[in-house]
Length: 605
Image (cartoon, rainbow, N blue to C red; front, side, top):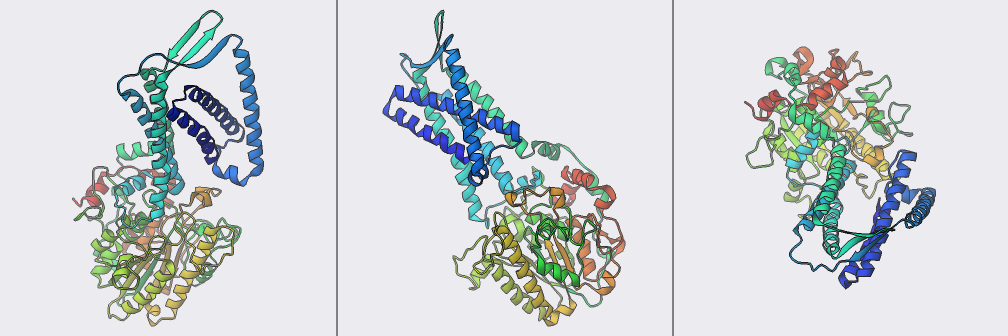
């Protein structure tokens, strides 16, 4: 739509120039051009929408030259038709804009109010489009949660794009429409037919009414874009599904082996099994994960289909980083009561104090634990979550600056690159392994974050698309770290798990792939042979919540009933909730408000 916006700009500037010069006739001429332009482009876009079923995008104009020619042809035809219709109408009716002799007094509050609500409506539409473009597959939980969180640690490019998009756009609409509506007090519409001449003043009341109608239309567009119906369900419903199916992870249900195993858990930002080839079960023409898929021959990979590589379904409340971590460590979705917990935003705030997580369990069993982040761990409440649950030591961007590994002002992408993350992970794993206690090293990659991912300087450029190259390079980095770990003395007694934290959010990259064909990647390496023997790995329907008990089982922990929280041990024959109830029912129930969840986990009553 930038092409259309540029056309409006060429008209808006002359209108402003006419206003500054108090050139009434120039203003009238430019207004006629603007009205004509709006009518022509609106009709053209409407025709294209009806014929093709698609609205115009910037990519249509830039990357499809033939489409531009077709667009220009339609504009020309529409303009000729309008001129012909206008000529016919002029035989019976003449319309014109003329100046009024009425003296202007007072401050035009009503017109300024009209400009304000027009700008507000534009902001709603623009912000909803920005949100959908940057964070696909949105849920009410994700929007509400992120609105409640501090901006510490967020990538500056996101803030900049929001400011330069919805904020600057709405501000421009406010200024331009305000100037235009106030100046229009000097004019009236002249209507002349064969019998008499009429005139219609641009009265404030009519302008307010029209602006309210436009505001209502834009608000409805924004509401559809962000699924307002889902918000209504989230705010008004109450499901007992979590209460009915929750299995408390009490100590009596768990039996650790005599020699406790170490765990290295790698959360891979937005990593999907979708990135494998179609022949392997993914959705790509070529396998972008050759090294991880090769390593999978040494371990366990769960697929939702009969093909080798599938993965988990993304359940409601698990579709962004901290929610994915909560799902995989606590077996729960991340739900946010409107009147409730700030999840670590404020000093002294608690993060799911009533939940028992993997790190809580490991802490009680004497584990040394570290969480390694290449960004500021404060973002999204990760610092609060991991420190409150098991006293996990945080090693993040701020830590690296403080201990001198990085300069005080070092900042790349979300903090520092994944190459440094794995370098620090090797140092941390070596140090942790020197203790007599078992260890848990958890880390989160970041290079594959949207939009487009982060291209490190030594990243091979095998593919035309940058994000494909970033995914492929991340595959190499993760696999290289795993191969290093396999050569270390501690590996014999260490289980390694690689799991995508959630589905990718790069809308343009995945737009051709149906959401039901996308799944997060998973891989379990070096679990005890007795645990992995005769395990069904294909045609498993599951969510990332099932990784909670599965991780413990992969560490040799025996689980009574093979269920913890809402998760099922995938290394057992027990059915998951998705297998038992179906994906739609599980998602519908998890999307609803749960008073049990709020009281039990959020407020710990």
